[in-house]
Image 1 (tube, rainbow, N blue to C red):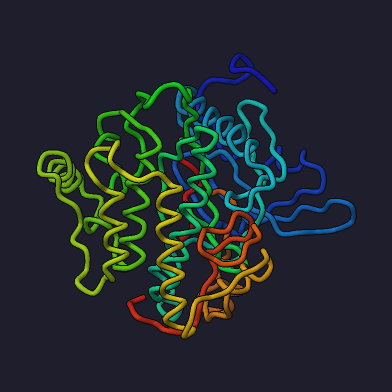
Image 2 (image 1 turned 45 degrees about the vertical axis):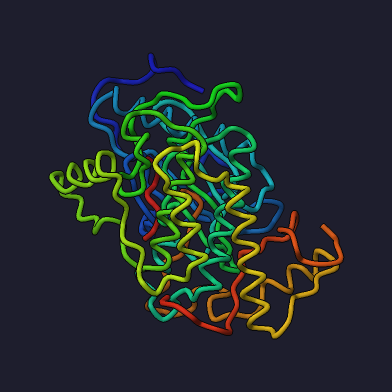
Length: 375
């Protein structure tokens, strides 16, 4: 890897040159999947051992100054280091390869064809989430957070745009450019108040973060899944941001939970966005609570409790056929996704192996973008 001293001063243009230094990699510059403050994500291909697969290629974005470019470059370094902790974990987007050679940086992720949760919520009304699907989506996200927090990693920017959906519509967390790994012996860390303001916890505005900061954001994501609205209206106006910050921090206000939101889901949401981080549930707690509600709802739909005696049957019991499962085949909706971006006698406890974030078709009881390229 190069050093800062090798970089010429001035503008750093978007550079695809080092993509081709990854053996078997190509990038389609015409097919932009997403963009953010730190990078641009394009669709590409990766050929290994004679097998070609679609991938998402994140390239460090344009920078006007060396200082800004170095900040972006460090974000790429941090993301690669974080993702390396979770290789093979199907809660977290997977990385195939990367190049770090200052000022160039490229990350090649797995390609997920069903795009982001944000697109599902706001751009695909024909595939809106019913109550059971919201619960299962929340379960999968909580499972991902539990995976991160077990290694003391705080995401810091959890939002629907940073949640990708796999072929079975199961969520995978992505975009770890501003995530932080904290010392397990301290309760919180001090950092810059970076994040997406409509999902940020009160303490995050003051530069303090801990695992519970992600839990607050999870509450906002669940609220958005049900309401199908962005928190706080989210126009991005500077004055509006200050007003919301005041209401959030000084008046302890939260978005209004829709009157048709089921009580169990509303209670989970409220517990996630409690003001005091110490009083919020852990990701494991949220996962367990949602699992119990899922079982209850499935019992209502199936006229009896689901009996699960093996991991395979457990997966089958939860992941019933659904209008959501499978690739987003509607031609007008296709945008593609990207990376960037226990056996037992009953199902009374959350599964440890199979993911429970599948979908179910029956019993619709409620209303139903690609991720930024980092940062």
